[in-house]
Image 1 (spheres, rainbow, N blue to C red):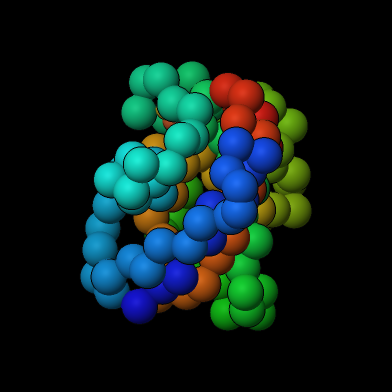
Image 2: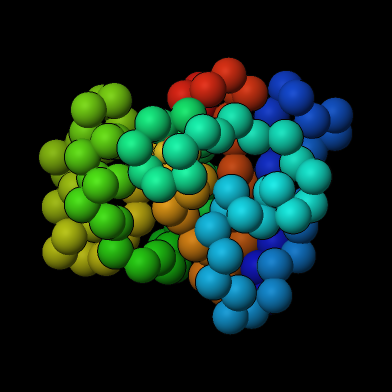
Length: 122
Ligand code: FES
């Protein structure tokens, strides 16, 4: 089971959701299902309204599915994915710290999702 904590100036206090192991919903879907306000628009990795910063409780054991080409492109356009982070993602399957909530699926790990509440703010 994963603990997903949402932290934003829009939330007082932060809110933790216990995601069911094997859940394949995105962080955006998890937020919406739990009435957590998070900016979004396209839900398809194109607009970056749902940009989030992900902090892993155990950084040495980050788990993630590979970034989609769409997410890589958008994060690079925003300057939120360095060349080193891209190499980590492509070669070592290590996820970067900035993600798009509509693309990111939490695995069996505890994470904190931070965002400002402004579209594209993280
Ligand atoms: Fe548009 Fe996530 S909602 S990129």
